[in-house]
Length: 421
Ligand code: AMP
Ligand code: GLY
Image 1 (cartoon, rainbow, N blue to C red):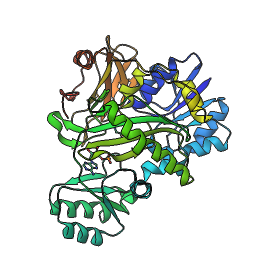
Image 2: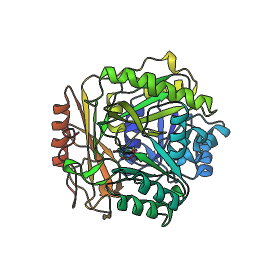
Image 3: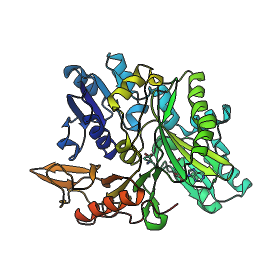
């Protein structure tokens, strides 16, 4: 099969490495990809939002399967565009990807179908929102931009003043552009966070092994929120008992709710959960694999990913048995100095072999460039250094040993992945 991956980060590199294990995959392209991906697949210089060019490329190169990995092209209807051209594509249609692209939609969906989530109100004017937080006078309070905001559209305000300035910067100063035309103000929940990715064909839902993301930039969960500084799988807080509760109260009801709304979801649905004292609740949905969750979940997947993609597209997911490796996986993200605020690009990297790898680990490239046999940094999150082992401690030791071998000026990573709540 000729396969086209759409995206350019560590998640896409993890998907690519897994697809390459399939005997069905004969030719793999990635648009636009990155330096590390270029060592594993043929990279194609097409932007992730360019539907027309993507479909044209897929037709000209007899693509049998297109895999749309990032949120923006999913929300913009990239899968719809492929389907219209008769090309098989993995990922939800735009009308289902809205479960991530609009928090107003997802919150209203959960309320309508009794799916446990934080209490909330929706506002389309800053004045009304400010009036509400002042009247409620409860902190912390969570302020969320409705639309996609690179994972930065959520502010946990510790004071009413902070909530007011968050509302103003989102709704009046348009910090996240049109994503802030509406906002959700919600109750602050507490408890460990768990990420559960699930394959679904709209009929059945098959959760993958659980994982845990470390979102803050610095050790001890200090500093700004990032796209994710590291992950582990499984998540130690996600017991079999909680899994059963989630299946009955969250996973199945969400799939059914989307069907009832006439928006069947096919692809990978990401449940961002919080295990609160009152049981598991949904913090957010994503319409795609998480990044860097994919980097620890996919190395544990035993079953051929191409077979799973086909089963999802053909709505035959119930017919296939998905197997996982026992043990654990850990991913440590190496980022550019200054990330997530401002950082330099184009810094030469040392310690990687010609394929961008080091012994004892799998290095997924997120923001790198490859030129004349050398790798250079090319983004905020640069690498996801990952290891799989019998135990979490072993996986962490292997991943950190590999991190020690990789050098670039300003390199920044957390030293406590897998150690914090
Ligand atoms: P999101 O982009 O919706 O995943 O939110 C980013 C992060 O903000 C989450 O991973 C949580 O750590 C935190 N968060 C979001 N909503 C809440 C909430 N209602 N209560 C507590 N923390 C939250
Ligand atoms: N790691 C969280 C996300 O992919 O949104």
